[in-house]
Length: 256
Length: 335
Image 1: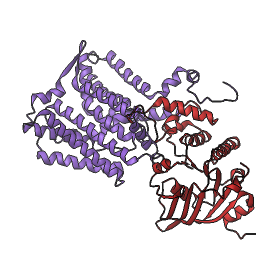
Image 2: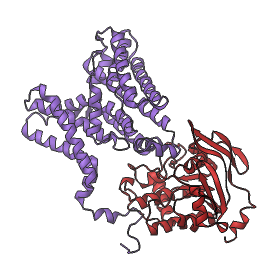
Image 3: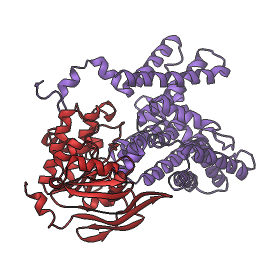
Image 4: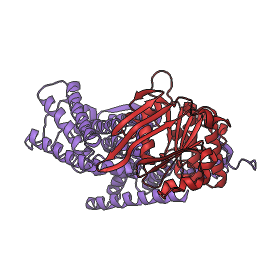
């Protein structure tokens, strides 16, 4: 994997935004942004608050529609009109707000919106499969939670984060987007999440990670994309840049 | 437990047993409610001679069956994060439509079908207002409550519809034989609907999505759940079940009055709330609503049997609503 940084440039991107702009009323959240994600590559998306990071990933996740520009998936122009459409393409997202249902237990959140059903009816939920698959996936990932019957309300921040990340794993997504996956975590838990991110890359996924933590960014990234005021102001291979340069791009100071 | 595994991801029965029976019991909301209900029954059985008679018990059941059935529909809506204030008006409306057709000589099944069909449509209209125009459920159904009540007055010119055929009235007044008891038909219908709504909410994909929408609508939509569809179904079912309650009420009373079920929406909501269905959505189940309706009716019955003046009933019911919700909040915090 040490040569990924060299090879990715020759590969076809799995997904790409071309000249994408997004306006909310008069607010220009994104302005003419190009963004690509390659297989077995981790891109970190950095930028100050309001730089447009969340808007960008929500366009990929089917939550927002671009006001202008194109989305390409495996080279073909696509529309992603809903989160379900994104899932169908193989785009999985872990949101900053974690998007969990606090009043429900672990398996219900694990399979949220994609509950397996019994037989051919597609009506009755296969609770047994939900519980078994949840146990299985969490075990594989080394995620430890109290009893599955616990409501998410009673889980700690780290446990919620683990659940939110764990549940996107079994769906075979090719693009995995994570908004601040280490925000609520301690040192050990963060380490685990970063390991998970590396595992996903090894499986050939294109991983997009938003992070504010420069150490984490330089730890896992192959490529770093910087947004400022809705525009892309930097797109660097990690090997060709430094934390100093990235910070300067984020805040908009003059380059050295 | 192993030191490197502070928690197990597996269903671990040992962990639950170690919690102690009392904690586990407190965790179970329905058990707590059933206990309150049981306590009421015991106290009343000891302090009055009439309470624990089959006749009185079945009268109580018949009396709360309409409210309970409407409250099952209300539960679906509240669990889905909404509220349906039009339920009381809908109860009157289904009764009036059915009764008006019956006195015109239309057969019973068709008349009931029409009565239920119309409240189903009212429910769907509520759902569409909430899901499409994004009106807050409180406002949409508050308006609908008044609109439907207006139709009840308008269609009848304010007069009760009388002279309902025996075959219809029997619905509310027949008893079915179970062993030595004669159980009122409305109570049997109530239990059937409770089971159906339980299966819907607890076992189906739609039920899971209803809890998800009520628990965190944004998260549900991010997960790809079509939240509008879930709301439409919830409000439609609430309309339909209020209609069923209204028909049983009309059959029992033998008359469809345009003023019937006035203020019932609050009893219907109260039954759900006493039953632990949180008004913030995403929590509770239909058994809670059933027990909530039972607790309210037994309290009314108790006040009568114990010789309290009837005028004071609303105050007692109000105190129970506040008490039940306070206990529930305390229960949630303490575990």
